[in-house]
Length: 357
Image 1 (cartoon, rainbow, N blue to C red):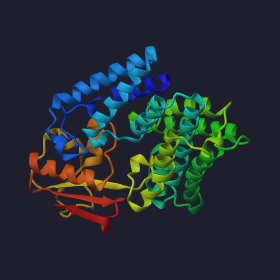
Image 2 (image 1 turned 30 degrees about the vertical axis):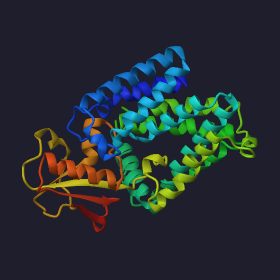
Image 3 (image 1 turned 90 degrees about the vertical axis):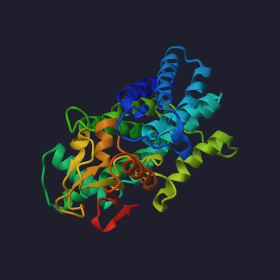
Image 4 (image 1 turned 180 degrees about the horizontal axis):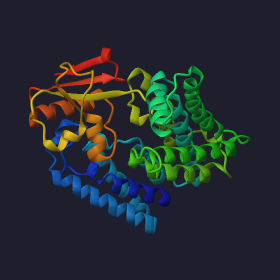
């Protein structure tokens, strides 16, 4: 857990603006009543969280870990955008740690989380939009500067989700777990090349996670196996872990569980949000996030990309859910321009545009 907290601390320092209210990007509390919380509360919780992460890294005190858990839940309730996939993962690993005293029981819960993470990460990439938006655009064109219309090369992109899913499943079997660990290590090396300084220099917030996961997976599986005997007489935390990591993600396809809570990393499809700006009422600081797009209703208007805004200011992607974007729209209209049209679009498909009133 100490190792996890080190990388968690680094992640929070990288994304420090995400954890404060002193920013242009709106905070979107989970419940409306939380809008009345003073802005200073965000900063206090952030500093307390950093303190707890530092103390636990040094002392390993369980009481500090318990305090950290409740601090993180509190601060994430104040802004839905803080429920990033890596933060959700860290919080759940911590939840298992503070509620389980038996090392073998803790091990099996963490192992279930790892297996699920890789399986569903691959599962949500089995989509044509992953091929066009990630494989072709980000990997082939931007990373390797390779343009092609060859159907075979384009179809090779489906090997990536299959690779992740098989690596996750392989962790469950004694004969394949070390092969899977090796495949996962190679996967994260590629991620660091692709997203890191040598590649696209993108999404810096997930760099620490890509250093941590190979270490974590190797420690959990190389010389250990999943003890399925615990499922014959499951304990409560194992049931909770299985429901949240192996059951709820299946309901994502039907809109009942959010992408970021389902290990959906770089699936290439999702909900995007734009503000169609005709008047010049947006702050000048946001001009970096303006784009020209065929999605605009008026060809002369400018679109503010909420995704780019979140990446640019907070260093994380915006939370991809319709309810989140509706709250963003309300705050935009209240604070900046009530005449701008805010709309969401599913997977950048112009036929799927929905305006938010």
